[in-house]
Length: 316
Image (spheres, rainbow, N blue to C red):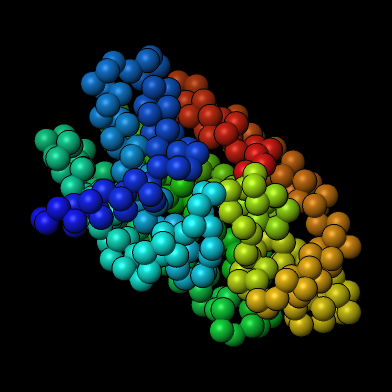
């Protein structure tokens, strides 16, 4: 490849893959250590970390694409990639995705679980794209109709768009890395990690509206972007007819004053406290699921509690 193309490829990866909290990638390494019940040797750590970076690359390409679809301005405290380079960013998402399979083939092709991991990534891509499609069709930016919103539609969107790649994929990759083949183990992981991902997204919806941009690392745009969030659905569930009329007139408008009116309705409905109650119930539910796992299984309770500790009560 010409030198300028190589430099662009490098810049694309460096700008869009590091920079976040790296929880997804680190979870691969952490989960491997928990399953093996010991610290990793240097070569083991390197290979587990490469697998973790593949998960982070999947996160990076989804964020680049999502920012373009949402016309977002900032991500992780810096301008969104498409704001920097223009619509060539569409091709850059494909380059990041191709790099995942390049690394998987380079480092893991000889492993008996290689094809299983490749299929985990392919399945996750498909499910995430379908979740994004549900989201886009429920709340298109060019057609404002919040009557299409519902908590059930939000749940389906979240499970497919967020839970699979953020929570299930890292654990599935770690389990394959450790040689776990029993399908029931992966079913167990889904039964806990998908609800955990739902809780994470509801938390993200709340932070988009209520966390300070300097802390969050981006400017929240869910209200302006007509997003089908937990907040708007909870508001629609409990609001008065007059409040609903205000929400319908102002939600999804590219207007700071309209956004402020929506936030005022949220505040009058005491949504921050309602969210905190939801968080307490979600935490208790997930802990109950985890407590039902035998400590002698292939995936011990600590695998799931490690995830829960990272996200419970987060502010960014």
